Figure 1 (cartoon, rainbow, N blue to C red):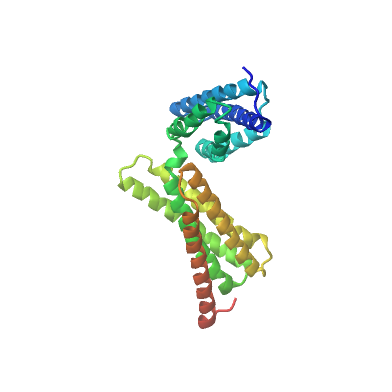
Figure 2 (cartoon, rainbow, N blue to C red):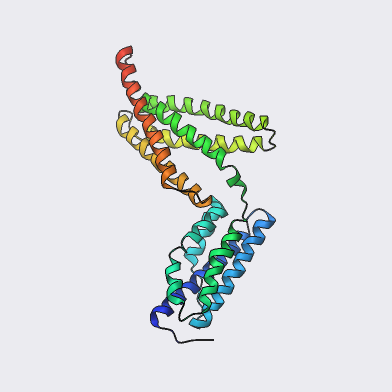
Length: 293
């Protein structure tokens, strides 16, 4: 069935058809490696619904569109690296601007109203059914990440003026960071065990890995820059802190449907504030203790 549409409407319908086609293939790709029988079943169901929508749009365009290989590869890669829940919800977020386009189609494409309802209600209900293991341990990752950012940012900032040598700062930070990693991971393990949880080892692993990766990222500027460039290294470290906070906050805001701005500013102000206070402590300690290195 083909129908004469205005050029503007035809362009929107073609765009909708392309999106539904691409997303159907993406869902199938993710289902091929997603863990959990119910997760795979839900993803394949979403793929079928997207393909059904694609065929409705195809009735109007009369075209057999080709998949967008770049988009499909990108979201499949994101799903493998960052988890399928994040990839799927990130992809669905892009459909927020489609609401205006659905309103434009209402007069010329009657089926658009039904598709819109399915997109808003049914598919969102299916997305809520996804259950990915790594998201169950976001709390453990946040614990490790927050503690590392606050504790190590403060320690490194304090070392900067006290030591004034990037290699000494990095060495000190590494010792503090690794010790704190084991301390935080063991505390999480004992806390989980005391609660009678059977996943204590896995929970402490997420906490420890998040902490250790943060330690490596924060120490890197002091290893990469010359030994005397401790102020530029401090500034670069603060930039890394902000980038880590922004990236992780964005990840959780998408995967768990949480607000981004409030959590970002909360974490950023705490970490930077601690760094400023610790830097001042380093200045005072060097001056009043009279320690020269």
